[in-house]
Image 1 (spheres, rainbow over the protein chains, first blue to last red):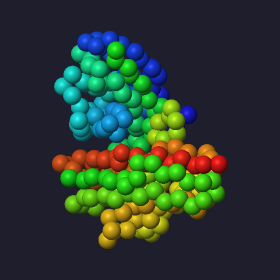
Image 2 (image 1 turned 135 degrees about the vertical axis):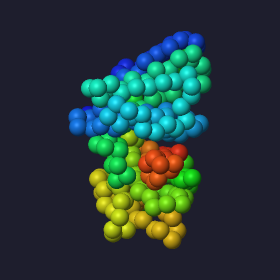
Image 3 (image 1 turned 90 degrees about the horizontal axis):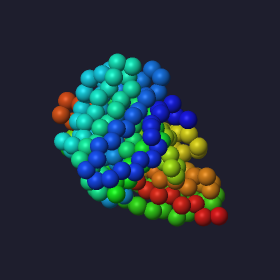
Length: 114
Length: 115
């Protein structure tokens, strides 16, 4: 157990639907990162939050949004889902997001869009 | 812009043999380098990291990596692999990009240890 908790572990939904993925960071970590992992694109950075505020944005589609709550857990919302959104979605956390921080990853949410 | 190239998508190696997984990076600024391992159905775990100082970095599970600035490489090595090392390995570089500390991951190298 890495200390980063992601729920649900698996999610199957239909095209056009909306889902919410949840992440609880490791105790003491203030930064949360979301990544999408697919076979053809590898690990793609989506977005980072630090202590409730958006810190950096990567290749996140406009149909996707995220937020970090006062208790530091984070949610990634995916809407108008397409078949191509099927992937593993990872959440990672780090202490402050400094340059030397390694990330602690959760075990991921496997999203299948049918 | 920064990038990471993992030169081998798959590396088969016999048990107890040595292995090297190659990683090259490009960045216009000082970087920090990391290796992560992903076991099946799990998230990534940090193996080791290079921030500064000695260019030879030791990590968990007997792995080590050497930072070579002139060749912009950060290859991962283990002198004797075990079956349990079968996993996917990701090299990552962290540097300043547009005012943010951005981490870029390589596409991964699948290490298959053959009994």
